[in-house]
Length: 171
Image 1: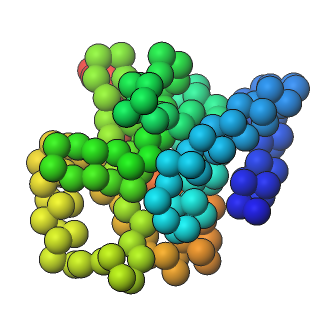
Image 2: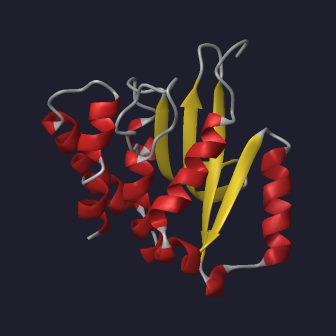
């Protein structure tokens, strides 16, 4: 259901990018969503993923739709200046998603946490977020209630954090 709603965003986004025939982009987005949904561990994550794929990551990002990658199986893909990685592991922590933005000489990472009530611990969250921040990884957290109410807005917040990673100058 969320995939179909998110896919409806593709024609308008394609038009804003000057793409006259969005069919290939629809096909690619559907494939990435299908691959990504298989990697998600919770219903909350599955609700958010389609919107991360079609989010607007800014005018300086050329990956559209944002590819989803299984880094355990494939490593990071060659294509794309944005990559969505479900179940992203960084050293001692696993995040529900990482949105990785490639710059010419480096990368920026935004970790996305989808917090259900039964798996949420404020104390552990503060420790994890602080540890990730020490490696310049920003963390964005959403409750399941927030994601279910407006997954498109949650994805827009993530996209804004990715945009804030910078324009790549000097990176």
